[in-house]
Image (cartoon, rainbow, N blue to C red):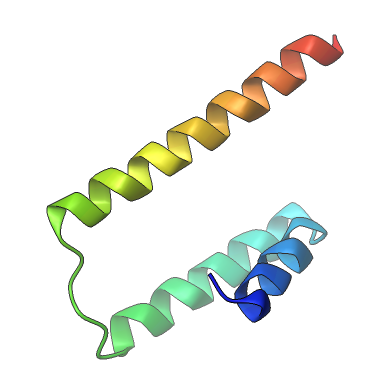
Length: 66
C-alpha cells in the first residue's frame, strides 16, 4: 500500500463515526463506478483474513484494557 493510502487510512481513524460511514459509502460508490478489475476469490479470502485478524487484535486490546 502506498504512503498516500496509508495516510488516508490514518486520517480516517480520527473521523467521527458518522463521517467514517459517509466516507466509506463514498469510496464504495466510486469503486463501483470505476473500471477496476473484479476481485478473485483468493483476493476476497485474503481481505477477509486481514479483516478478521484486525478484529481479533482490537478485541484482544479491548479485553486487556478492562
